[in-house]
Image (cartoon, rainbow, N blue to C red; front, side):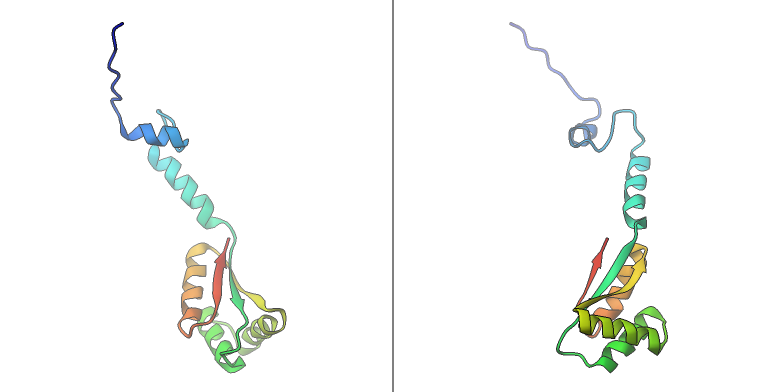
Length: 115
């Protein structure tokens, strides 16, 4: 019995094919860009959780700083987080949610990005 050595001319494709990430004739950049673009463009949201550490004024000021909104809107978000345990502080693209969450975390507010 003879053995035949099989070589893969493009070994980088082997694991991608196995994982189903690409096909031999697919353009890798297109596959990656489409996948990342679709996930990051989905509606994301920043959820603010209630805590017993911060005052309403601290939360309102930080929400105004993060969102660029007025005191009334920030107050509504803070009140909802206080009464319901959590509130959606912002929704939009991932990059902006990441920025908003970062500003809210500056004073250790409890936030989560959900998508």
